[in-house]
Amino acid sequence: MLETTLCYIEKDEMYLMLHRIKKKNDLNQGKWIGVGGKFEQDESPDECMRREIKEETDLDVISYRYCGIVTFVSDQYETEYMHLFTIQDFTGSIKDCEEGVLEWIPKNTLSFLPHWDGDLIFLSLILDKARPFFSLKLVYQGDYLVRALLDGKRAFVTSRLLLIPLKEETVWTEKYAVIRHDTDEVIGNAGLVKAGETTEEFLAKGWIREEFQAEGYLEEALQALRNSIEDLK
Image (tube, rainbow, N blue to C red):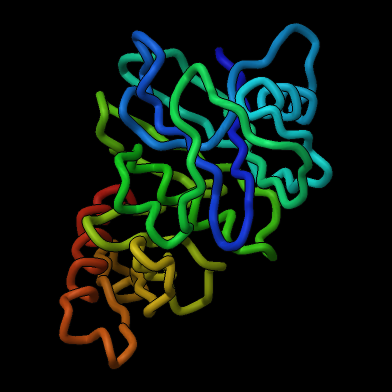
């Protein structure tokens, strides 16, 4: 099992992103990701984070937020536990990185850059400063995300949306915030409800803010939930 860190350094509504185009045989080849890397012997997560940032950027960390742990499961690669950080304050000047090109990228444009599908989920989560420490599990077949679990509950990525689980309410079996992943804007919610008290049949229901109702977002969200109903039976 592999342990790594991934760090998103913040400045003026931008993240410092690494375009992975220099390293040979890089599983992240061509993608834009944060800064980070593998643990060294006896390192703690924050020690690894600080060292990797210094090595790749030459920046020194002043303050940070330890956001959560992302578990990657793949049919091609070793299982990985990734410790996720955001960096609010730092000192120093950025140097050239041997593994790729470093560039400040506006947060609201990240979804348009080459990335792993699951990255959109944890990028949305870390933008919420009030969100407590989380555990996110991402399961891949090849380059395709086939399953995501946030604190034990399903999360979904569609072509335009993220569905992030909300606290369960009595009427809903499962309920999700519906988020546009190009803007990280919450535009509604959707969920699954039982068709009756004694049945195992489920219905997908939800609502979308009025200004977005003509865009087909609700049907896109509900279809993702319908596809998951077999998991609840």
